Image 1: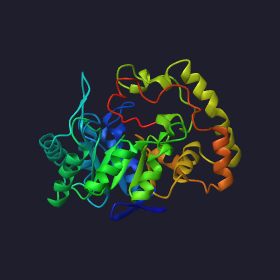
Image 2: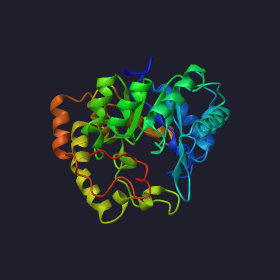
Image 3: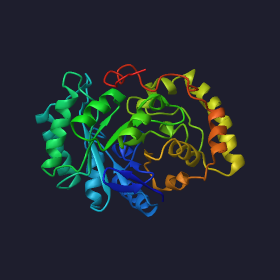
Image 4: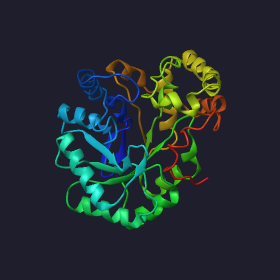
Length: 319
């Protein structure tokens, strides 16, 4: 697999997002998750991403039970699951969360530690100072921010260099193209793209609207509610046809498009099963291929917002 820089290391150009191990999109079990992790390593994936809120620690526990110490590992803190949903970025809270994550992960340190959402009341320079102290103490190798504005990235990086910024980025979520991708490139910061397959919209087969009520958050997500859901399926259909005609898998082409937007971008698709990893084979997309995909799915084509209002409360908006 192609390698891309993440901090002072190189990792596989495609990472792995482990949110689904916490049961966020459907039933799972540890044995299936462990097989999936092994298959990911066999496929050349070396960077794995989780968070304390994924299944309220379940995803971290699975990775801890996996026991691999030779992979590059990221986790996050900062979101307090409600109701009401809240965020905390104070140093005492971050330190407590990190110790709990390390216990579940069965590690003495983590390679990359993200603040999952920024608490506006705490100056970003103070937050960067907290993360710098964790680096100096050997608790983490680097730190990242998630869902923040380019201006926040610049301020944090000036205080203490960032390793990565994580943001949703895919064919149907293009906000990072309005400044975040460029800022990260300029500063030498990796952009880690979560949900690069549109939470299943760019999966092997067209989605069906059979999400688990009250568990799968897509059940109330604007893009997956009617009439948006049907409109989005129709919009994506020509892209599926193009993939079929070229012999590409739909997930592989969608990931290839994300990779083609910058050599500092690392997408982290997720899955619950090893079988889906075969769909992530990246085709060799030419400049004309990327342009054709853009013509079929232009920026802004999606129907509906990417989050509901309650989930947008702590996402920094800058355009």
